[in-house]
Image (cartoon, rainbow over all chains, first blue to last red; front, side):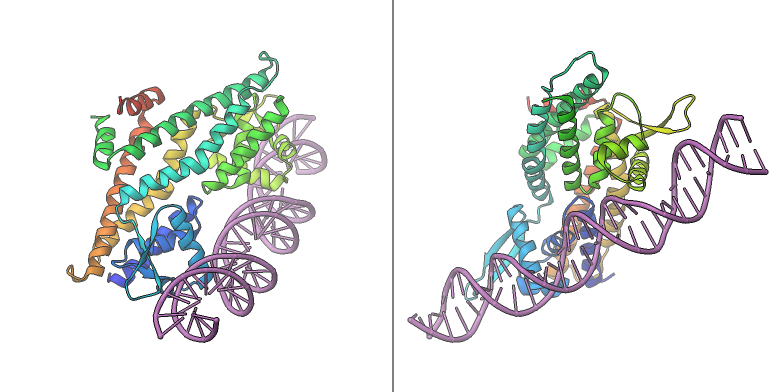
Amino acid sequence: MNLVEGKEQFIQAWGTLGSKWGINRTMAQVHALLMISADPLSTEDIMQELNISRGNANMNVRDLIDWGLVEKVHKSGDRKEYFWAEKDIWKVTTQVAKERKKRELEPVLKVLDQLSNVEGDRNDKNVKAFVEGISGIKRMATNADKTLETMIKAEENWFFGAILKLFK
Amino acid sequence: MNLVEGKEQFIQAWGTLGSKWGINRTMAQVHALLMISADPLSTEDIMQELNISRGNANMNVRDLIDWGLVEKVHKSGDRKEYFWAEKDIWKVTTQVAKERKKRELEPVLKVLDQLSNVEGDRNDKNVKAFVEGISGIKRMATNADKTLETMIKAEENWFFGAILKLFK
DNA sequence: TTAAACTTTCAATAATATTTGAAAGTTTAG
DNA sequence: CTAAACTTTCAAATATTATTGAAAGTTTAA
């Protein structure tokens, strides 16, 4: 397999993976492309490599910037903006963890808090099932939140080393 | 808040969360409904509670069964099938981890293996960026795979206890 | 065996999400 | 200032995904 084929395959695979995790396929592809590019790319480069429109390229790059995965780069003597992606995969992972924690886990924790004080007869099995279900989920969500927090602060080697050692 | 309102809110919240993680909103709602129901529900119950069609209810329940989150239950003296969801949230979590590992992580690991032996001049910075990018991702994916494996085999208390202690 | 009760399928439809591209907006060199 | 170079926006078009509901399939009681 040569470089061009390899890139193509990786971009497709990353796009497919992203779409299974609720991430826009094109956004994941732009991310993939930037991650394996030696140099920052312009919007035009991205449009050309992925065969997408200017608007689409712009929108997805901006989203990646919002996620903290991509940065704008300016080359001296050039008015164009270039885009560069973080390539340290541990940093990418913790950044994604951080964002998803903030965007998705924390809002759920808020809702769960409100739900746990539903009124009703605690002897009613329906009430009981609800309250127990919610409290279990809340406990799990809180643990997940703390675990992500730990992970976000950790170093890759230390973190995985510690986890893998758990079973030795 | 009363029980009916609480249920409604939880079902909506779970559906929203699911859709952000690449899970069909309705499937997540069916799961939510079953998790907080004291007794197993029939297809008709589900149709009525969520205002969805028979086909939709059937399809999503079947998917949940495929994911190992829901089971069929038969009541004696009744030909209808009823559906019951696992309520132990740790079991739910590890089951989801197991399935996603199998469905999404393992296929990616296979692709990454193929990609890491791309031909080309290792002094070419483009080849270098590609090979280094891929190898970093592969290392991370392998670690994630092992961590999930550890988690799947663990007990909730032991697992979170150990992780949270990592920082004390 | 058969017909009622129930479950599953799937083509058509609807809903949702993504993409385009041209127009509007912004920045900068001269 | 102003026009070229570049970026962003967004309504309309397209593509993707989910849903419906009636027909087909299956099971079981009698």
